[in-house]
Length: 67
Image (cartoon, rainbow, N blue to C red; front, top):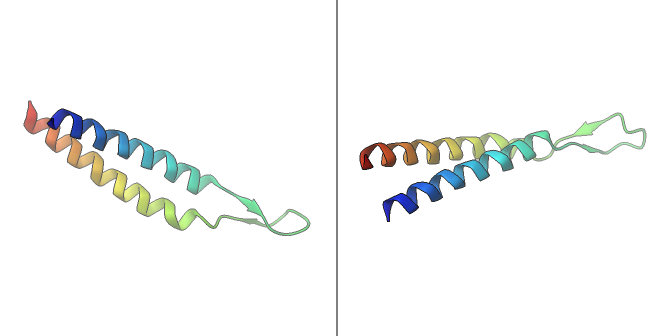
């Protein structure tokens, strides 16, 4: 049972890292000339990275206690 929880925490962290990369690298052009790039999702990238890091740390701690 603990192994499934560790794997789910690890997969959740990986998915959050991927989503945060997508949020950070997203750019939308808003002007007619296309020279102005706006990233409205960049503010969500850093909290997602923080949450993923916490999940990864919890999974590592649980795994180290398991062995």
